[in-house]
Image (cartoon, rainbow, N blue to C red):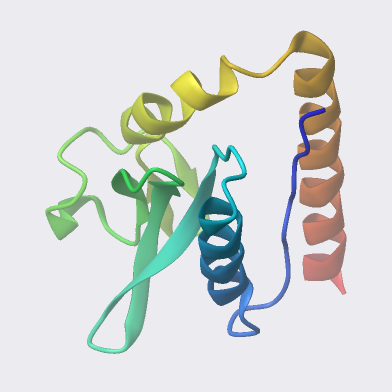
Amino acid sequence: MARHVFLTGPPGIGKTTLIHKTIDVLKSSGVPLDGFYTEEVRKDRRRIGFDVVTVSGKRGPLSRTSCDSGSLNRRCEYRVGQYAVDIPSFECLVLPLLRKISKDNRNNIVREIVATVQDCRELNRN
């Protein structure tokens, strides 16, 4: 049975570190593993965006604080707060992974994402 994990929390508490260690342990144990996570990108100790990273090690820009940062060579149609989102990069890396998921599991994932977004919006209001 496939398992899906969503890890959320405030910046700097070790989410990415936990993901890296978990991937290492599972891979070294021979557990079949696939998926992706996001990792912050910093320049001069300032967060300038996020990359999407697959478990297999492929990486691409997910968002940057500016369209003219050099990382986003496409039009900046989509924004989330201060970040311009690189939809084509995300789709190139993540859609092939999502296509492998069964329809039932896909519906569960969408529900989890919606719930997480709603929780984040609620936290931002307080």
